[in-house]
Length: 139
Image (cartoon, rainbow, N blue to C red; front, side, top):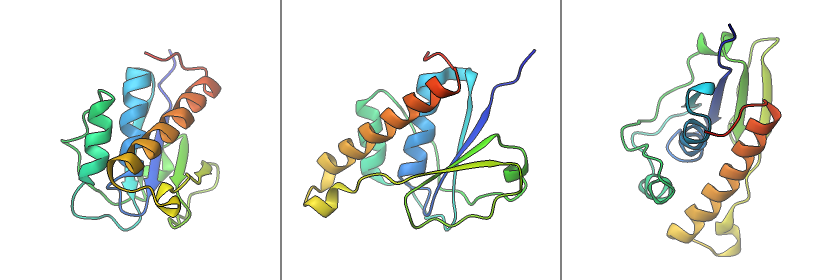
């Protein structure tokens, strides 16, 4: 019997991108992957536009909340995905870490819900590619 891989998505505030990635992973993989999220300096609430953009895609993260990276958790995850350039994280030896530097539509003058949809779509593409790499069928 094999266990589902555990993927931890990390960003600074854990209010947007890492929450979106975990939600999209849970939707795509179901119980075949344990998708978690955390922040290096967590905020106090989720980004409302992130919640709305995921809701448009059929993913409900409204019950989530920003949380700090648990150092003990870093010892048991199979993969850590750090979203963005700002988050810095010390990971124990042997834990695989990848950084996803997502495009920032606001640098091109794209704001609000349009920006968040572009961020969501890019993260979803990366999540699906990761699932293919992990040989996990999409639910």
